[in-house]
Amino acid sequence: MTSVDEDDSARRRPWKEGPEGTGGGAAGWLALSDDDLLFRIEALGPEHDADALLMEVVRSDRHFFIRQEAAKRIRDAELLKDHSGDRHIGQILVRVMNRAEDLVYLERLVVESRHMEVRKAAEAQLRSVLARAVDKRS
Image (cartoon, rainbow, N blue to C red; front, side):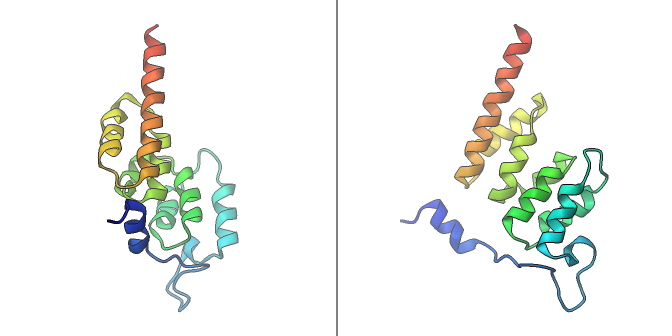
């Protein structure tokens, strides 16, 4: 019998270092080197309007660290919900969920996610949201 993590490692998609589609097909941020891409992501201000560009990075085959950094900067967390099955993006998604409406989604991730990291992050965020709700009532 194999563990979830062993099964996951067999299904992992390979990541690509540097610009994608070096045959001239890459455009925008995905045409940047890893270093330049991380610089652009980190340089975004809190009120940026670059969610569409960041989502291109999240959906790309770039290294998980670069994809996570892009996910952290997404302002509209709803955009990340389609990527909750990705253990690296799922962890970022649950950390930004803090509204009462998010409770059902977090509970579903705790039960359904096949990634231990996502389940644990969802459990921690769920406890945090519930604790804040109790504090507000006091």
